[in-house]
Every structure is written in C-alpha cells, then in structure tokens.
Image (tube, rainbow over all chains, first blue to last red; front, side):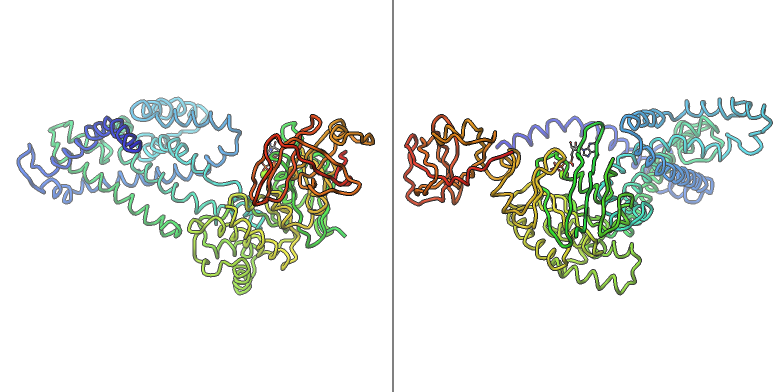
Length: 283
Length: 334
Ligand SMILES: Nc1ncnc2c1ncn2[C@@H]1O[C@H](COP(=O)(O)OP(=O)(O)OP(=O)(O)O)[C@@H](O)[C@H]1O
Ligand SMILES: [Mg+2]
C-alpha cells in the first residue's frame, strides 16, 4: 500500500519533468527528423537533402572541420584537465572549492562575449598583441586569432574549465587505501597511476571526452562571432541554412543537424567500445 | 629477542596528541592484538608502523633494522584494511600477483607463489573473478592473500573482519590464525571485538587514549585487569569504589585501593570457605543465551552476577539471594 502511494507521488512529481522533456527535446527532435526528409518548402517525403549533403564536398569539409576542431580541442582540454585537476586535489578543501567556483564561471563564459574578450586581448589590435609588439615581438607573425589556431584556442578555453569540473569528482573516486596498498606492495606513485589509478578513472575520462566532443561539435556563437561565416563548420552551415543569409533551406539544415547527431552517437559508441576493451572488468 | 620494536612513538594531528610516547615490542611469529575504543589511535599506530604516517618522535625497528625513515614500499610490511581495498580493475589473480610483479620476479616464480597462496586462503577457482563478483569474506581473503604473497616481515590487519557477519567472521578468525601459524608471520591485528582478540592472539594490548593501558596474554587480561579502564572495557566487570566494596562486604575494612573489580561470573551460589557472603535483592533478571544475569542490590550497592542458565529458573524479582565470592576475585585496580 505505502509503496504504491509512494509510486503515485513519484509519478505526479515527475510528470512536469516529462512534459518539459517532451516539449523541448522530443518535439523539436521529431520535427528536425521529419523536416530532414522533406523537399525544399516541405514538398513531400524525400532523401534528396541527405543525397545533397553526401555529394557536396562543401558539407564534407564542414563536417571534417567540425570533427577535427572538436576532437583536438577536446583532446587537449582533457589532457590538460587530467593533470590540472589532479593538482587541484592536492590543495586544501577550501582552496579546491574556490578553484571550482572559478572553473564554473569560466566554463559558462562562451559564445559571443568570449570571442569578443579574445579579440580585445589577442586580436589584430588586441591589448597583448600591442603590448608584445611594444616589447619587440610581433605576435601576428606566429599567431592569428582569426585563423584555425585562434579558433582552437577559443575552443580549448571554454572546454578546459568544463573538463576540470567533470573530472574533479572522478579523482574523489580514487580510494586513498588503493594508493596505500599499492605503495606497501612496492609500487611507486607512477606505477600506481599506470596500473590502477589510470585504468580506474579511464571510463570517466572517456565519458568526459564524449561530453566535450559534443560540446564542441555543437558550439556555434564563438566561432561565428570570431570568423563570421567564413570558417566552414557544421553549426555555421546549419545557422546559415536556417536563418538564411541569402535564402533559407531549413530542410537541408535539418538533415545536416540530424547527421551531426548521428556523428555524436557514433563517437559515443566508439568511445564506449574502446573503454570496454581496456577495462575488461566492466563488461 | 624482539622482532618489531616501537620506541617512544609520538604523533599529533592539529595539536591533538593521538599517540603518547608509545612503546611496543613483538617477537618473531607472534600474533598480537590491539584492542581499544574508537579513536584511541589504533589505526594511527598501524599506519605509523607501515610508514603511511610519519611519527613526530620515536623509532621503529623491524628485524634489527631501523626503518624509521624508510618508505612504505621498502619496509616489507603488509597491510589489510577493513574496506579490503582490492584493485577493482584487476582479477583475483592479478591482485594477488601485483606485489610480486612490483618486485620484478620472473613469471614462473610469480605464478607459483600466487598459486600457493590462492590455495592457502582457499580461493581456488576464483582466480579469474573480479573483486565485485566476490562476497565480502572472499574479498577479504583476497586482500589477505595479496599481502601474504610477498612474505612481508610484519603483517598489519586493521579491523579486517569487522564488515563481515558473525558466522563468516568466526570462520575467518580460525583461518587467519592457522595461516599465521603456518607461515610464522609476525602479525598485529586491530579489532573492536574483544572476543576476537581473546580467540586469536598470543598477546593482547589494550589501548586507551594513545597509550597502552595493559598488555598480557588473553587470560591475564581477562582475569587480572590492572586499572579501571581495562576493567570497564573488558567483559562486564563490576567496577566498585573502596566505599562500595566495604559496604558490600560488611565488616571488611582492609581495602586500600581506590577501585576494585569483580567479574560477574565469580559469584557463586555455593558456599565458599573463607570467602565473602553477600545477600542481595534481585532487581532485574535477564537471559543472555546460556547465562542468566542478575542485577542485585546489597547494602545500597548495585552489582551484577552471572550464572549458567538453568532450565527451571526460579528466582523472582525482589527475592533475596545469597551469594559467595572468593577473596582473590576482588581485584584491586590502580
Ligand atoms: N589524518 C588525520 N588527520 C587528523 N586527525 C586524524 C587523522 N587520522 C586520525 N586522526 C585522529 O586521531 C585519532 C585516532 O584515530 P585512529 O584512526 O587512529 O583511531 P582508531 O583507534 O583506529 O579508531 P577506530 O576504532 O574508530 O578505527 C582520532 O581522534 C582521529 O580523529
Ligand atoms: Mg581505526
């Protein structure tokens, strides 16, 4: 009886959540899928949009660019975060909390304001660019904010704090007694991390990588604000097709967005598969 | 000749002294138990011996060698924790072989040693399992095997059996003792459970507030507590002040110590020659399995007396009971 009533309460309180998910997740998803199989202007069922994407090298390039920048910015961010977060765990609890607040803040600093901040600091007449020039070092010779490397820098900038926040709890999962046992059995700290600590945190690191990858694949505003629509990324293509610089083709945009989703799912599956190969105990 | 000596070990955490100039010495192959209330510094002492905590003062010698400044990994000390601390990403076999691999022994030796230990702790057939696939008792045996396989000079066990249920705990106690004797392993066990301490060890060290309150064989500890703390901690001793004892044994005047202890089972219903005789009023009777416990009052002093349970229990509340006690069973405490 009591159990039933509790279930009832549970259902009632979860209904608003389901409605929210339905309205803002499934309905748009459904319309995106539906519209991706429509001809221009909604003229009946067709694979035409997908065919166009598969045949058009311009879209191939957008996917390639997006995947490359997402992959590398995620990889670099996660590589840095693994070490940065480990050093954070060595501080006292109080300092750790402060660093996390800071990470939280910076992780949310993205999009147009972030691009603008970078332009002010490292742009052609940015603060540091001018400062360095004053000291006789022309930054522009080796680094151009409006190029690929500038874009990668911005991506890493907003990925890194997110990675730190996601990896921080992972280190809490390492029991002190594993380290102590390993030490008493003759293992050095490096051996501990290679044989025990590393493999244990690996699935979480891989999961974090997936999130970062998705985060980067879906990023739009920073890249758009920095390079306009000159840099060919999937999100910028979708943006152009739906808002329409010249003429809008929302159906084609939907098809690209669907493929973007598929890319993420495939990336997630590859990730999962690799993780399970290394951590045999999980399967 | 002592094998492990601990001299004047002091340790404080944030101005709170946890170990007060503690001394301890153990012979080779001895099994000793540290028994004491929560927070008295048992784990801290073990971790200091293992080198996981650095003491503020004092020296530790193992097998004639000063290890005070030696790193944990070079101390040849094995440790088993209450939480098992098995490596979750490794199989039973890999967990057990870990220490041997760290020693860079050749493959064949690693395999043979591991196989021997697996058999000793009766885990044959479980080699390929992962820790999460094992029961608590099995996991603890893996942890034991993992520590034993490297043949440490000293084995430290920090409440290894506390998380297990009573039945398995009893079995593992026996197994632990027999393995320890077979390998002649110098062992220190930390436990909360006095029965466990009495059952397995050669010597028991009662710890209180970072000091050794008393040490001795289980028999000595149980029958001759030397101070109030031990008397209260061990068993269900009646701990009475000088006035209370004098009142209880009316007419006796030569009690010199401040405190005295009397084991509840020392009271007898049969007359004891040259003993004390007490008539007490029964306040409460309780059945504790095979014994019956009486809470009595005599001359305004409350005390408890135990007796083996009788089928035709006859005692009634408020009834007066006459009990006898040997003089030597009134133990003076310091
Ligand atoms: N790393 C530490 N930092 C600060 N205080 C500590 C630390 N480790 C132990 N203490 C303190 O030292 C005291 C003794 O702790 P210890 O763990 O040795 O007790 P114990 O006898 O093992 O208790 P239990 O039976 O509960 O395990 C406690 O008051 C504890 O709070
Ligand atoms: Mg403890």
